[in-house]
Length: 67
Image (cartoon, rainbow, N blue to C red; front, side, top):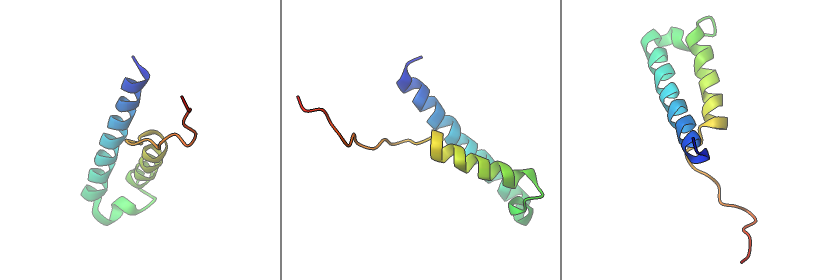
């Protein structure tokens, strides 16, 4: 697997994970945001995964090499 394919796989799975936990939160209604339920914990965890692992865009190189 190439680095690009691995990055796309991570981005895709974290995006789908966000959709799944958002649906779980919706299904539980008000209880979906209460820490007593695991859906709220999963939602917080998935947001962190999305932030750190699932970035769909990349920042431009701040120090491009001059050719």
